[in-house]
Image 1 (cartoon, rainbow, N blue to C red):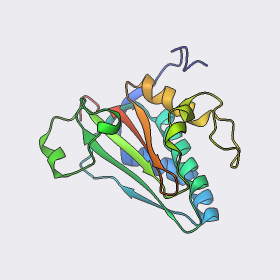
Image 2 (cartoon, rainbow, N blue to C red; image 1 turned 180 degrees about the vertical axis):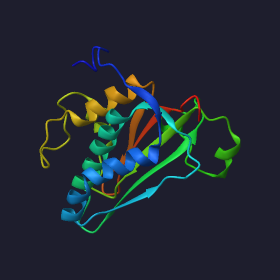
Image 3 (tube, rainbow, N blue to C red; image 1 turned 60 degrees about the vertical axis):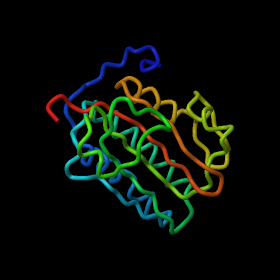
Image 4 (tube, rainbow, N blue to C red; image 1 turned 90 degrees about the vertical axis):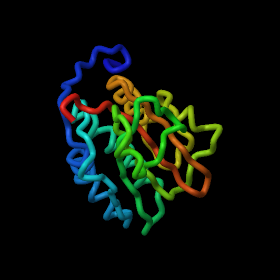
Length: 182
């Protein structure tokens, strides 16, 4: 509720995306092992640092990664990747990483968590970010995880969205501002 009211103070600092992702992965390593899901990363060493509250962003990545692990089949792979983007890029217009990013003005980093799980029907994709909303009660939970992610990302001036197809899996994307010293 403090996030919703804009009353949660953010402890902002320049943060290394790779280090934050690594912390989130460590917290979920036993779940990944239990579900026999391989977690891979694609995080370029040249990625600029982000301006963020490290603890909150680790929790965002944990939530997204935890969902990917829960909804992925045994023996599958989850991929966490990040790349620099221009501030004009938003939502489904977000360019995928490629060599052209090296030459463009960068003001954000896009982080994506992809799975090959059950997927989310298009008609439910917006509702999953609403408080207490769940597409299915098969996996349990409070329905607050994605709401938390949305509130944290937006409090940082970023955006969060999903691209998904039934039977093909889901990719959750979010953007965060680049640190001034990046």
